[in-house]
Image 1 (tube, rainbow, N blue to C red):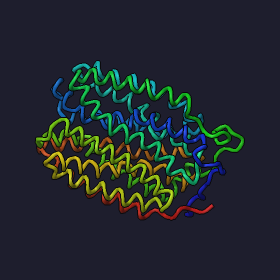
Image 2: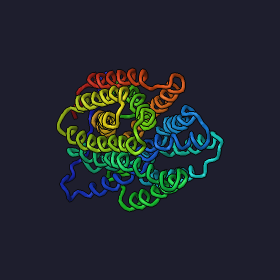
Image 3: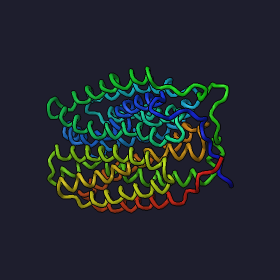
Image 4: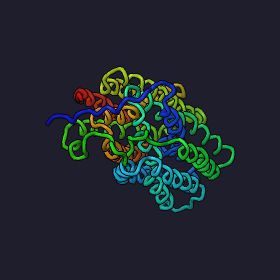
Length: 408
């Protein structure tokens, strides 16, 4: 079956005067405090305080991450449909409000593990409305030849949050306790994410869902019947299991091996810094080179990082491993929305992106749970991390099976 024709949006000047850069900058700050940054990258910082306060096992607490990821998996296609139908701002704003309030409410946790699971379920239901999935459609309508760099600007917000929020969370926990840390971080979502989104985030006129000439592209059904989507989905699944598993337990793994709490948090910040750099690098490379080749190389770096983490015994090794993993995180975040627009256009972009998030989130639920189970059973993460490094390498190789972009 032939691939759907690629759709190139109508020309719009893409110099610095393009109003789309304001949209991209607002999206940068939105994703910086969204689900993919705040919850994912601070989870391991809160892991030991929660197990210490309530006597929960690491596997049980990791199950909350799994609950959130599964809710993301179930809800992402529906959110994507709403984004395609109603436009980003109408979806992002209520999701951001619920996410910020729910995250702050973790400061009121009770000893019931089901309380934790219930809050994480709410975070997962609205989560992708606060991530790059929510913002990418709006930004993509403003750019064509520089779309890779524009999307990289959005994704760099996640990297910035990953670089700063773990250290901030650890300092808040050290100074004021984990409950106050949850209150403060939830308030940050409401104070930063909502105003900027309300004022600046919008689709380019005549590119919206109700315009006279809506974006062209492939239907969802045609996409799902082709092999391109499923190759991408398989690579995302393997990389998500591996990378999310490693990230969720990185801080606990390093402190188990004698690394200090602040140094372990620094390793997560190094991951965020590398993710930030990886996003900008990937965005620039995607505008110049064939996307699957770029993704293959950068996921290969993550495989090396997971392999190093399996043997890390010092803070320096932990920081180096986290940095290599972060490069792949940045690559995946840029790569997926970019290649979706190049293979399938913007007509059903958010819905298709939602399906890829379902795949990514299901795998993201499995990875941390596997890590927690491995530790509770053996007292070590090392053997499983070796297997996850291999899975990430396979994901990188799968990207080489993607075809050339279809012509107009």
